[in-house]
Image (cartoon, rainbow, N blue to C red; front, top):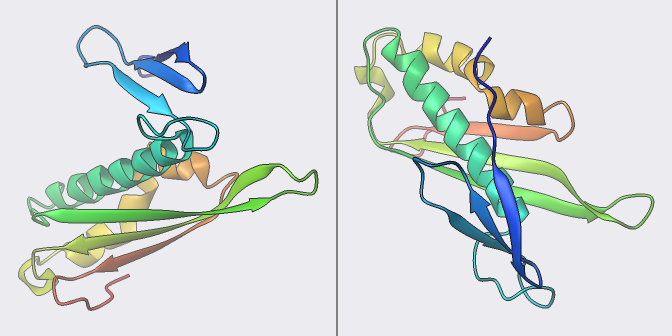
Length: 147
């Protein structure tokens, strides 16, 4: 079993919170966008999207590295769909994830295997997927859809 992850969030003002990741990582600020907050940092929804994007990107690198390959520079974009639930509360109802590669997939002999496996390695997206469906697209540097 791995070590537990702990983050402390402390209110600073209105909807602005100091996010403390522990003694080794710099603290960050999170804030709701106007009209609630002042947009002084990423919103909780943006932090969720960043966590999914980062974890999927890392998992693709990990899956590729298992075959001693490097997918190169990755750019991952997540857009969140937000809608109201039956109680009229805002919820993230879906996420669209696009990973853009810089390396040509035909230069990676085992990339098909990495594509098959990498989502399963992603702790965050697989945990989130239990409550929020997401779609995933992986594209080559020429824009060709690989997955």
